[in-house]
Amino acid sequence: MGQCILCPTELAEHPFVIRELGLHIYSGEELCYYIYHNLALIDDSFISSELLHFIEVELGMKDTVVKLRNMIDPPTGSKATLNQVLTQIMWEMKYYNEEELEVFARSLEEYRRMTESDRVLARADALLERKKYYAAISVYEDYFRNAGSRNIGPEALERAWQHLAVVYLRIYYFKDAADCLVKAYEQRTNEAILKQLYFLSIQKDVDLPADFFTVESPEVLSKWQEEYRSLFAATEEAMENSRIRRAMKKDSVRREQELRSILEDLKKEYRMSE
Image (cartoon, rainbow, N blue to C red; front, side, top):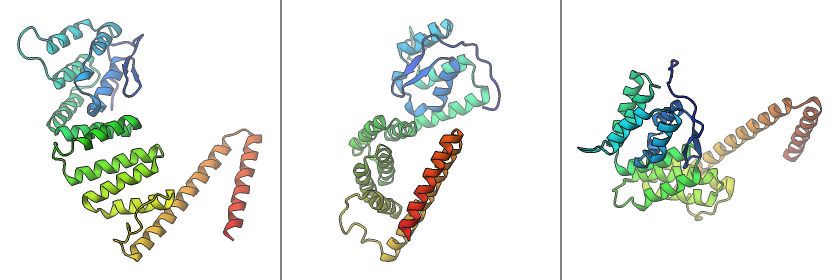
C-alpha cells in the first residue's frame, strides 16, 4: 500500500484464528489484508459464527455484524453471495481506499469466473506458497482424484504434478517427487521436466527405468550434466559464503574458531581434488 489509512478498529483481546494456516488475526486491518491477499484460500466456510463474533465482540463493530447477518440470512429475498459479504466487510473496515477496493472487486470477479478445478488448483498452490505442505498435498490429491470428471487438460495436469513434486522435494520425499515429475512428463513429454528428473536422479540417486533418458541424445545429456555441475558449484559457493557471513557475526573467540573450521574444510576439499 502506498499510503497510511486509519482504521477505526482496535487490537482484539482474543484473535480470530485461521486454523488451516495457524494464523492469528488481531485487528480489522489484519483481517482485511488476509482477505485481500488470500482469495484462493477463502470459501463459504470463512463466513462463520466465529468470524462474526470476532467482528462484533472483539472489534466492537456491532452495526457491521447486523448488516452482515441480514446479508447472510435475510428475512426476505435471496441471501448474499460470498463475494458480496467479503466486499461488505472490506468497505466497513475502511482499511483500503476506493481504488484498491476496485482492484479487489476485479479480483473477486476473476476468481468467480474460474472453473471449479482451477479454484482447487489455486488453493493448493496458495498452500504451497505458504509452506503448508501437508495441507497442499491433500488438495492436490483431490484435484487429481476428480480430474476426469472436471475435464482437466494435459497442460494443467502437467503444471499440477510439477507443483506437487515441489511440495515433496521441500519435505524431502524425493521418490514421491520423482514419481510426480514422471507423471508430469507423461502429460506432454516436456523436455524441461525431463531435465528436472535428470538433475534429481543425479542428486538423490532416484531409481528410474534404465532407458528413461534414452529419448535424449548423448550430447543433450552431457550438456545437462555440465549444467548440473555448474549449478551445484554455484550453490556450494553460496552456502560457503553464507557460512562465512554467519561466522563474522559471532563474538571474537567463536568467530576465530569458525573461520579456522572453514579454512580446514577448504584445505581438505583442495587436497581431495588434487
